Length: 244
Ligand SMILES: O=C(O)c1cc(=O)[nH]c(=O)n1[C@@H]1O[C@H](COP(=O)(O)O)[C@@H](O)[C@H]1O
Image 1 (tube, rainbow, N blue to C red):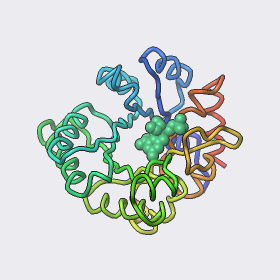
Image 2: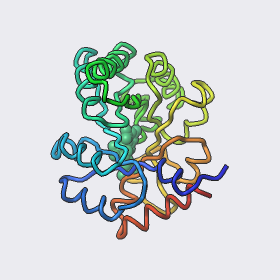
Image 3: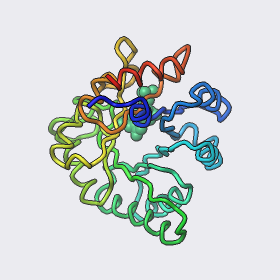
Image 4: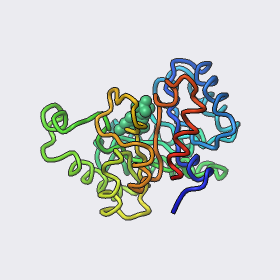
């Protein structure tokens, strides 16, 4: 079924990969009124910090805090507790940290919710294989044998077992993930490239329309919007394509 404008925009996550809050604010201003998700990643968070997340929340945005935690379980539990207390709507950890680490992240979320009844439970997502990873990188440099899809599905299974809400993967793996983990297991898919735009460092890509037709829940788009001469026009074109 075709998506409405609001539904499509709500499934678009704009990656605010900027070196300063000022630059991110320019794009937020340009996109004003579009009910999209905003993604804050490590470049922006490490300079603008929790205050910037709070600023986005005070403007009514849903926020995905993409810090891809990957550490020992106890440390990740503490990190998840702190992130949950920031009031974000979604955050992620690397599935490569293992089942115990992901379960600890979940415990961190629950401990924060127990300490403050006003908090909302964020969606907790496991990063499978980065969308920049190709078959050769996986086998030769990372040292995992088999296909990228097999590795993504294995990580997705452990992510689900740990009690997380879904995974980050490429749009190419969405159908296999949903087939294995169920339709309600959330897929967040970067590696989105509108026709004609440069892949850059992304390896496993689809267009916005193709990704939606694969059944993904959210698409993450950075440079095709932030690097466009008119970011608002680029975002509107992507939303239009998602609605087809
Ligand atoms: O977790 C992520 O958001 C993520 C995972 C992944 O596998 N690949 C990936 O590109 N991302 C993020 O998605 C965004 C993609 O940005 P563009 O390649 O500029 O569209 C960046 O902010 C990445 O950090």
